[in-house]
Length: 428
Ligand SMILES: [Zn+2]
Image (cartoon, rainbow, N blue to C red; front, side, top):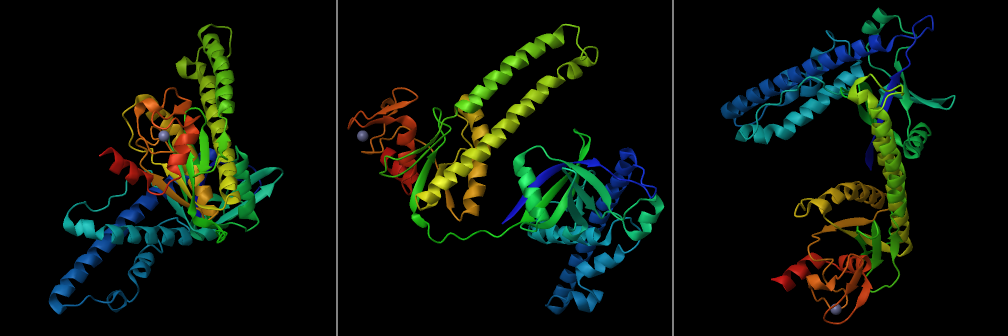
């Protein structure tokens, strides 16, 4: 399985005398590489296009396609790489990773291109730099994570008088999961794969989108026909159950609300503080004055991120414990009928993504179902009525009198195979 972790970088480059190099200088080098990457990408597309035109003409004449090697004496990729051997500063491994990616993109878009349903690819400025996995070297030292990246070729490197042949950055590690990933990459438990170096204009910072891969532990013992229904509800963030079982997995969402309340009351007092003088933040415009408030928003987001990791991990443990080889969840994309629900879905989306990832790691299938009426249907007798749900938290069936927590009842419905089709048949 492949994953990506986004890492904010701080320049830590030193020169031959071991004195630090100004980050601005390094930025300029990186921007130059970015400019060259864009040129290489656009030229590569042109070469692909020319070769494609040649080979279709050839086909018209000889009724067969030419072999790349007969025409170019290399493969198309080799031929293009040869063109970029000189005339740029890119480290050769990264340069060939770049052209490889472009050729792949060209080949993928060829059909649409011929049909005329898309125009030829044109790479814009602010292109990510493709980094070959062998060019990335992680290190943990003095309680910090560092990454050294081979970015310049030998020829270009001499110009800058740097201490090493790679450019070194400190990695900003904000949470434990990132830390755990980096540790596993260093110990080789995770294998680093081709990654990207991206400049974020807003944050004025370079990010490494580090790709890594690991083997999925196959869990053949789980029963794919045993479904855990997962309801992301109002009362509980998660309520999950196996059909027919009274046992349930619930997460009390209180801690996020509690955190938000605590932090928000602080936020209000800080906003007030910002308005009145007597504070170091005054006199720097509205943005500077309210800056700590934005940090609080970040804080809430990070807290939710950590909490969602914890919830999803616990849910997967519950699924494994109950031998469930399948998890069923509501497909919450595209519901816009209720603004409130829509907004709520945005935070659920993060939770669902995390559940899906962790499920895959444990070899559990994830099935998304249409959520329509799953909260209005009685899981005991199948009767569907809006009035079944008298309040947010309680469900009472008007037909059979089944009385339960509303989220649990919904999770029971969601744990039924093809429940959305069943409901559709019942309603129409
Ligand atoms: Zn009923």
